[in-house]
Length: 447
Ligand SMILES: Cc1ncc(COP(=O)(O)O)c(C=O)c1O
Image (cartoon, rainbow, N blue to C red; front, side, top):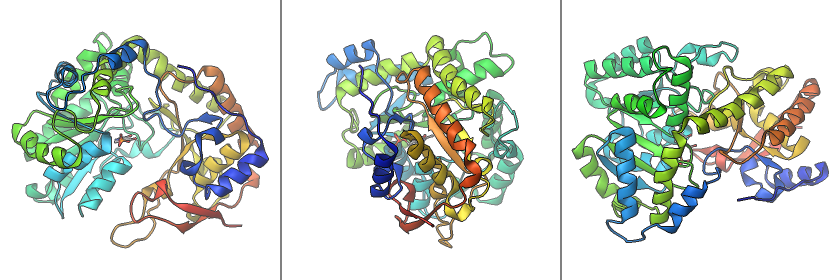
């Protein structure tokens, strides 16, 4: 499939971003030249996936597409029980409705925003136990998604077991820069969790990219297949939530899967209420069929080498221009260190958002802020939470852009970098939602 992209002038972009209240989520796609907002649901499906679409079974109950997906999930992850959902946050909604209650604590590695949103919405607390190295963009630690075992032990010891329904490991860890978690760390987290009698869940959106990094960086895994690595990773998990829009390489979809029948039985009720009957959960049969094929394609080594190679290509170009980025480069995106890039913009004026807007004005390239806007307000004090790092994320859709597109991105960002000292002010909030505000926030320039 080929889709057109649209060139624009700077004066058009100035008007459009003003009309969008300086929120890039509010732009129309025609107002964007190269769209690196997200790698979620933006990938291109393969010939085999389109063929699978044509043989989708749209029966309300018990469709062959459901069983195709169920068997694929069992083969890849080893989980007997599974429920389709319409996307990843819906998977969180269903499973957390069973597991999370007011006053709970949920340790993990830099929980993704919707995960944290679903935890805080239930008046529970997400406890970030990521290793300190992930906060230093120049530190070349190979697994910056790892959990700090000491911190995790302290967290598990501090609260009664009944108030820790699970530990959640995000593979790869989006919020720290698409950074992987090592097999050793996963194994050690599981051992610790077992000592305290607490289950382990994976937020699995980019499980295949995580497995790729293990195969490339962790001693002992260089001769294992990606699927063997995936199978071992998930042998340490009790359950998973999945946004299929990433490593499922489909445009919409999600699921939960688990070993435990009682979790499954309880989740079924919520799935039926929120998503749909247990054998479709908000997905069309054809989409489940395409997902089953996509999950297998995402675990092909040639695909992963090219996918992650493209992200590295962009990272190398930016580094070549001296632009500060999270290193090693992530699996799905290059994360630009906005605090270092724009040292003159105060953090209260949303540094990373300011950089995203500057890149859009420069060349019509859409990126996303992973910084103070996304960190939201503290649910108790309502004060802004200021994260250690302010990132502009350049997420690369799967199988969509060529390296030439990425060269345009790199040169455009270099142009902004050349004038970074002259950018001294940012934005203030005009209006915001009480939770997950970054999607709909309205902003104005401070000057
Ligand atoms: C790590 C992670 N978890 C969960 C989600 C939520 O998935 P969805 O957008 O399908 O609701 C995302 C989406 O970007 C993600 O990156």
